Image (cartoon, rainbow over all chains, first blue to last red; front, side, top):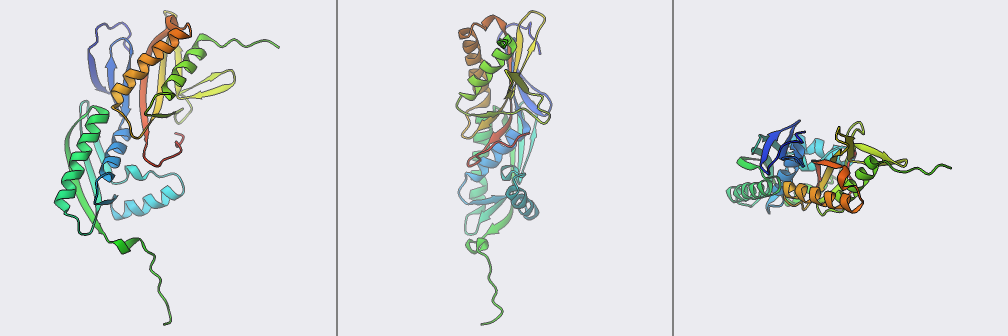
Amino acid sequence: MAEQATGTAETGKRQGGALEQQDAGRGSTSIADAVVTKVAGIAAREVGGVQNLGGGAARTIGSVTHKVGIGDERSQGVSVEVGEREAAVDLTIVIEYGESIPRVADAVRSNVIERVEGITGLSVTEVNVAVNDLHFPGDDEPHEETRVS
Amino acid sequence: MPVLVPSPRARLARVALETALASEGVAAGSAGNSSLWATTDGGELLSGVLAAARRDGRYDVELHLVARWPVPPLHELGEQIRKRVAMAAAEEGLGDSLGSVRISFGDLLGPGEQEVAER
């Protein structure tokens, strides 16, 4: 850590998978990529019409790992590439049936940019949204099959 | 029974961690995978803080923190914590012992998440 530097100029750099901002002489603040990933995931879920994140396999595995306490649904379906000052985000989402997919995708894009830029100070260059599935209200109800009528 | 006098290093670590944890947007300290980021103070393990001596007699402090949603801009939060740690250290008479304060946000506790997974 540079201790003898003077002045107040701040610089951004990558350090061990985290964005680090150096405040010369007094220390630094770093943000792990996992934090950027979670911010993006939470921001996407904040948008009305988004039912879930992740592909089918990711959602299945995510629900199991979450139940046993080792998974983190908030990172599911989110991939980020973080540079020194910029980030690119890839999202896989499930949308409620009936919603306008372009409208929801645009809203997701806007909210993710707003949150990631606001919280981490990174500039978001792109948010790629892949709609993986549609969700119907009856999807969550257990299907009871009777063998006799 | 000898009375244990906390070293300036341990006192600084405690002051820094308690100051950070009192900040809005901070959920916990994280000791890391191998509990590397921790300090023992009077038999108590302070998770998420490490203080290390420098040649000039000061101690550099590292804070490894878990943020909590809704979270403010993290670089501003880090700067606020750094200033508060400096003030708290000065109030404890440790101002001359404090070197740099390095802050790392390694995880984020989202809405509804109650417990911090130990890493």
